[in-house]
Amino acid sequence: EVSAITSKEGRATGVVLTSGEEIPARAVVSGADPKRTLVDLVDPVALGPSLGWRAGNIRTRGVVAKVNLALKKLPVFPSAGDDAERLLRGRIVVAPGIDAMERAYDASKYGAFSGSPILEATIPSLSDPLLVAGAKPGTHVMSVIAQYAPYALRDGEWGSRAEAFGDAVIASLETVAPGIGKLVTHRQVLTPGDRSTCGGHCWAMPATASAGSRASTSADPERNRAAGSPAAPARTQLARSCPISRSAAEFRRCRGTRRGLPFAA
Image (cartoon, rainbow, N blue to C red; front, side, top):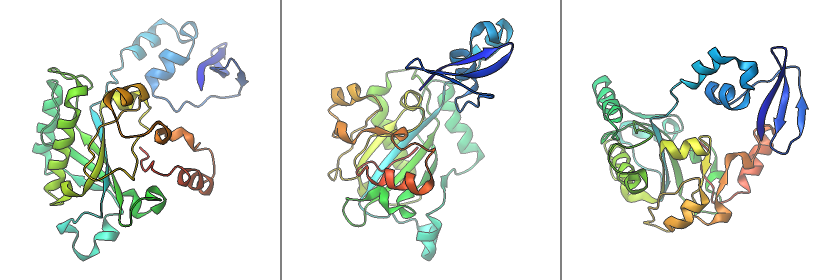
């Protein structure tokens, strides 16, 4: 893990790891957001007061939540017709129109989550059966990006409100896939705060969860234990468990060995 970017005479010269090891480089490419890169990793003296002030004022609190679902079987989307399996391999967007999108965003502006969130969903197990290896036949997983949800709620805390937002997501899915709620065997609600703590890559839900399980989990193991989450610590990993620097084949094999960890953000 990188803890700092080194520089000399206005040019990046390498990185320092949390272990203390220094790695020299001719150039440094950051995969972190601009604010984190400039404010947390670059020497403030090298950055300068003007750019440092501007970077520190970048508003980065997200309004995007994520809901992961384990399903007994593939849900039925009537609009997909007879070509459902092929069409459902792509992106599923639930956005009734511009007005609906505006109303959904309005809620987050005032510190509340949308009761009718805009959704972008995928069913990755259609393309990669390894995601449900070890689960009951017919099991699928769905990953749902849900908008909009404020980073901090005006009334209450996410710890007690996450399930209500999960219910709103299911209700929106029901409008395009009637009966999907009854297919959910387990769900994981990741709030904007949860996603920021794990870099957006959170795997913390077993595909083999018992029917009816609806616990919300976060990337924080202590919070999971406090909440009585059914997700065993051995099954809670981050996406970085399988480095993306590996080849595609190696990454698939690595990911396939982590049974019960179906979701990649």
